[in-house]
Image 1: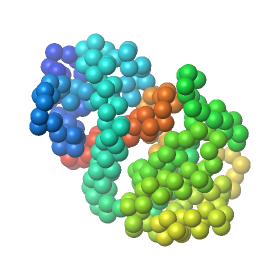
Image 2: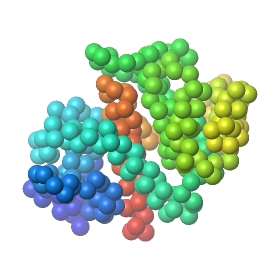
Image 3: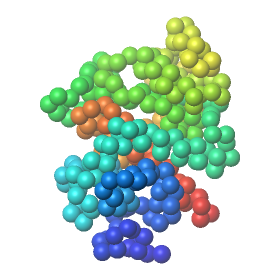
Image 4: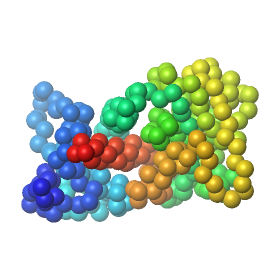
Length: 273
């Protein structure tokens, strides 16, 4: 079927970030249902998502969205509302379980990898940021924990000067239910130490295994390459090239939304195999 016929609005040309029919069928049941009272919903949620995914993929400002998509104010309103209610994370986690099941794995991983990424911010007024002296980056830090396939288990966005160990501990604590079957957490040397190991054992009962870097130049570390691939996935979305958001909660929602788009595409593609 032509991409022109696969979009919700048949009067406009499709953008590369638009949801296909197969992809829409995957995410539609996961979206919040309309209220059973008050003014009925008049917006097309598929086009709302197309607008959000357009911003994430292209990196443009909300007010610079194309005019053939819904009004940017409406699209941004839904993005914010779902951020406040934790909808982005809920959809992400359900899709991650689907992807793992499709791969023949259990919903919850026995392996986790922790790492962080420091990114620049734009210097907006009111923006909260710090300075990462190790990576010489002024901005924010993305603390993530992923499974062996690079799928996100938990995340926290902080100022760039936040300690990696503390950030990882918070992520592990908040993702406690998803770590019920986790036996080992792989980290780099910066996360090592008895205190961190003891905290991790108290949080989820997993052991900590440090993967040492041998060469001084870049190298693909065994067992930890999947977390680097996750950061590589971020690079597919220009909105994540820097931290453009005023609040860290919006930064997390942007990351969840981008990974949701990636997983939907993977699930839809596999359904045709």
